[in-house]
Amino acid sequence: MPSADLPLEECRAFRPDLPLPGGFDAFWAGTLGEAPHDGAPDKPRYKEVDCGLPRIRTYDVSIPGYAGRPVRGWLHMPTGATEPLGCVVEFLGYGRGRGLPHEELMWACAGYAHLVMDTRGQGWSAAAGVTPDTDPGAAGAVPGFLTRGIESPETHYYRRVFTDAVRFVEAMRVHPEVDPARIVVTGVSQGGGIALAVAGLVPGLAGVMPDVPFLCHIARGARIAGLPPYTEIASYLRLHHGRTEQVFRTLSYFDAAHHATRATAPALFSIAMADEICPPSTCFTAYHRYAGRKELRVYEFNGHEGGGAHHRAEQLAWVRDLFAP
Image (cartoon, rainbow, N blue to C red; front, side):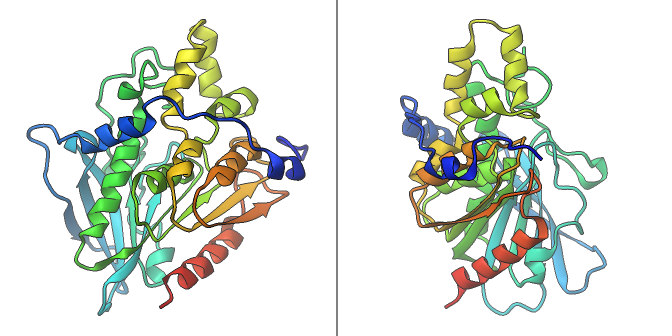
């Protein structure tokens, strides 16, 4: 496969000037400090479901997210735990919903609580229950999510998604069966970008594991990626001439490479050098800017699938060591 981006050695040296947008910290402090709308649920709700798996307890979760509106998820917990559990909070790839309750069980099988967040508007399984995105701001957007509410940071889609993700972590911090000092966030692609954003917005996490992260150095991704979702931005700008500066200003508030500069938890990154969806130079931008202790696994000949099952084994070992007494 031809190189999708810069060669590995150039990516290792790639440190572009990427200034923070004005009022970045104040914007996010204000967003996360907003009170829920009237009538919104005030606390997480957990309903146990029978998946036919006697060693795993599974709960259908509804957690108040952005503006207090309920966001769905699955919480998996190993049976028989006698002490508070370490917890992995997982965010999903672009276009994925939480799916069915028995799909994602690795972390619970390893002995941890595992919370999977449905991504608003992206769910596919009506039977499993989905989280709609009913907020304003989709007018003029091209198909997809990157340009939804692109007119300003206040209306952009990922303002709502990042807030949902923070609320999911906060819910686990007060769950009686979870150790609040042992919470790790993770995700692949879009989920990796969300995990990086949460690491920058929530102090005191135990760790973060972003795999082939999306939403990093978005302006570069929009200009060089050959496949969606970054191409949604180019599609929008082909229709809306003269809005380039406005579009990239809005997106800069959701760029995980900026949030990485605020993150201090230990991190395990993965980057794939043949990735045409999340070009490796964009992922390296976030890695280089990450402010905490960090490790990196590079998959030189892999595309957006990254390290796959091999990297899951790396993650299992990394979390085991992270949570060791």
